[in-house]
Length: 97
Image: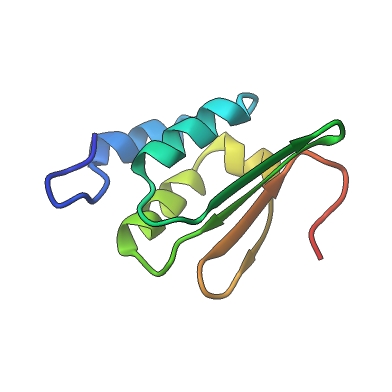
């Protein structure tokens, strides 16, 4: 699903758009397989989970974010985006500051 030049394929981007918003561990596993550079932080606690995605400025990661923004996962769990390619998700009742 990754193209020869390591950019995400259209097929992969379509898969990301259909991520099951209830299965965050599956989402994180799939993202780790295609994400370039470090930039995924996933924390699980007794209160829930939070996920940070940092694109490191790579356009392939930005393509993944764009596809993710079209998913129900984004709709239910997105908390905030910060200039520079930083995205925060959570299922906890708290919000990021």
